[in-house]
Image (spheres, rainbow, N blue to C red):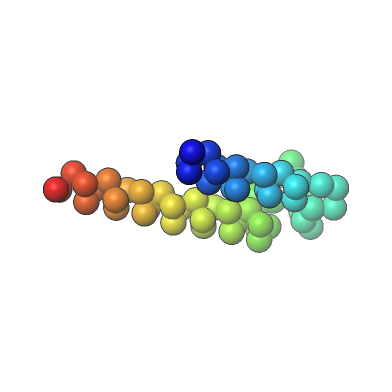
Amino acid sequence: MKRIALVLSLVVPSAALAHPGHGSTPPESWTHYLTEPVHVGLAAIALIAAAAAWRRLRRRARS
């Protein structure tokens, strides 16, 4: 249940940000995803979460 709440908390707010006028670059371009602060922030959160999960799995495997 906690995982579902986590996924929803990450997905629902990002859907609310996808509206006309979102960002200063064209939304269909690849530069939009690399330069807009919202996307960069979400990518950073995803990388931190993946690193934490990987570290936790390594610790469990060593035990």
